[in-house]
Amino acid sequence: MANRLMFEKPLGMRDTLPFFYQQKRKAREAVSHRIESWGYQFLDTPMMEYLETVGEASAIGETQLFKLLDQQGHTLVLRPDLTSPIARVAASQLKEQGYPLRLSYDGPVFRAQQIEGGKPAQFEQVGVEYIGENSIYADAEVIALQIETLKAAGLEEFQLTVGHIGYVKGLLKEVFGDEEETQEEFLRYLYRKNYVGFRKALEQVALSGENKARMKQLLSLRGQKDVLATAEEITTNGACHRATNELKQLQNLLESYGVSEYVSFDLNLISHMSYYTGILFEGYAPHLGSLLCNGGRYDQLLPSFQSTASATGFAIRVDRLVEAMEQHEDQVGPVLVMYEPHTFDQGLQVAQELRAEGEQVILQNKAYYEEGQNSYKQVIDVTEGGASVE
Image 1 (tube, one colour):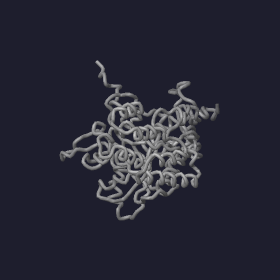
Image 2 (cartoon, one colour):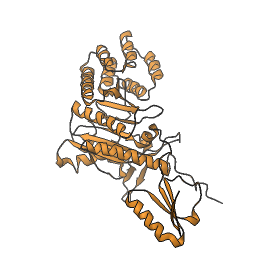
Image 3 (tube, helix red, strand yellow):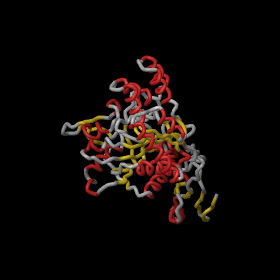
Image 4 (spheres, helix red, strand yellow):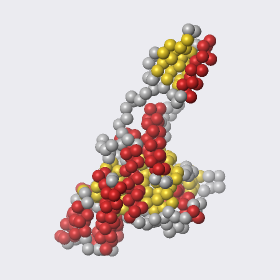
C-alpha cells in the first residue's frame, strides 16, 4: 500500500516548477541589479535563529513561528522575516563600520499557516535596510528605490500607498486619552481593514459628536497630497502635525526623484509589524489580490539588539511580483542538438560551440527523444551525413 503522504507537502509549502522558477530568477536579478546600483550591499543570514532574540524581535505572531530544538536545548525558529536578522548583524558584526549602512537581502522566510487558504508558509523576499539615518531623506530614498526596483523588474502598473503610524496613534490618543485598550482595539480594526467593524465599535463608545466625526473622517483620509491638509485640520496635537509635515516633505522629495505619480496617501494605514514608528507604505498591483511589497521606518527594532540606530527599509514578495507581471509561457526555448551514439562526438562539438556563444543547449540522444515534450529555439539533428537544422 502506497504511503498516502508520498506526493503531499507540509501545509503551506509549494513546489516551484521550472517556468515559474525562471521567471522568479529573472525578476530577482533585475531587482537586485537596481538595488546594487544605488549602493546597497547584499548579505545573507542563517535560516535558523534563536527564538529569544530574532524570533521575539520579529513581531511575527507566536503561532506563525516554526520552532525546533538544538542539541543544547535552545529553542530555534526558522526566520520569519529578514529585517530582524539584519538588525542583529548591523548591531553586532557591522557596528564598527559606522553609519549609515545600506544593506540588502534576498532569501526565503517561513511563517506557519494554520489552514491552507492559499497562503504559502515559505516565500522569498528581496529588500533593503537603510540603517543609521533618522531623516526624511532616508525615507524618500527607500520609497524611490522601491518604485525603481518594481519598474526594473518590468512591472508597469502599480501603486504605493503611504501613511504615518505617528498620525494614527496621535489622533487616537487625542480622542481617547489614556484608554490604551480602546486605542489598541481601533488599531486592530485599521490593520485588518475592517472598516465596518471600526464604525460599529465607534457607535458603542462614549465620545462627543465632534470626536466621532473626526474618527469617521480618519477613514476617508486617502488620496493625493491634498488629504494632508485635511488631516491637519481635524487634529490639534503635535504628533499628528509632525507626521503630516513629514509626509509633505516626503511628497516634495519624491517629486524630485520623479516617482510621485506612483504614490498616494492613506492616513489610516497600519502594519502588523509592531516596531514601525513613522512613515510606512504598502505596494499593490492590478489583478493581484495580495500585498506586493511593504516597508517603512522602524526605529524601535535596533534597540532590541542594544543599538540606538534608526532604520527604514522595504521588502518585495518575489512570487507576487512575478504574478503581477502576468508572464506567459512564450519565452524562447533552448537549442536542441540530437545525436546517435556513433555521432556523439560531432553533436558534443556543436553543443559546446553554441554554449560558448551564449546559447542554452540540450544535447539529446535521439533514441530517447519524444516529440512535443518541449519547445525549442532550434533543433539540430546530427546524423552520419552532417548536421541538419530544423
